[in-house]
Amino acid sequence: MSGPIRHRRHVSAALALAVALCAAPAAPAAAQDLTLGLKVTAPVASGTVGTEVTAGIAAGAGAGYDPGLDSRAYHLGALQAWFLHPAAPERARELMRDFRGGQADDTWTLRLTTPAAPLGGEAVAAGSAITLTWGPPQTPGGVCGGRSLTLVDADGTRVDMTLTGAHTVPAPGPDGTYDLTLEIGGPGSSAAGVPAPPSRLLSPRQGRRGVLLVWSPGTGDTAGYHVERTLEPAAASPVFERLTDAPLNAPRYVDADAVGRGTVAYRVVAVSGTGCESAPSETLVVAP
Image (cartoon, rainbow, N blue to C red):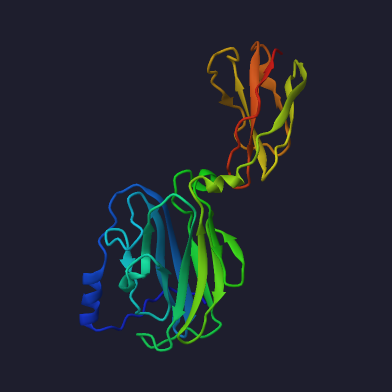
């Protein structure tokens, strides 16, 4: 159902003031290893209701509830969502903003609830589509070298969250709950999507038309290739220039600009469908 998200909050002034006073302060500018924002929406009779939750890994974050980084969830709307934090105190185990420490893999529980009589009067009907949407996670290394993120549905469906995406689950019904699992890999775990470098780089022909290069594709998700060349192959640290503006579809390339340049060297980089680049292939020295 289209239309703006409406947060129906017909609450008393006293309750609104209490929520404002209990709100956590803004997160400090500490180094954050991961930030993932999730929007959760569902239809009601008059439009759409929604909420947001944030998961994060931050340097210096503790194992329990940290009022400087986290914010507690308040049960106010027709659609509620929070991360269950078993290490936090009993009163603060339901968090809308949950930052934790640690460098290892971790598994979090995301709970969705649909109250039978929410404040505001309109409930989410059982079986309605609850939609979760998210943008690219903010993590050093990005999708190619950061943390892997997998959303696991109650039915076992696994969703890779390293790119912008969405997932839909059925509303559990009056006062029902629906649990999903968020699997967060350790630093560098998303590098599993980086393709292997190409191999067997050869130049079967050189002449007036240039240097022909061919190679064997590497393993993994390979969608294209970049070719790089250096004019100083004998240097201790040669500088390579990228010759291709966009990835090549086929494992071959003709360098027409190599004629008359003397001895040069080439290498090839594989590119995945998500834009992740492999390590360079072995260098090939050519004297056209």
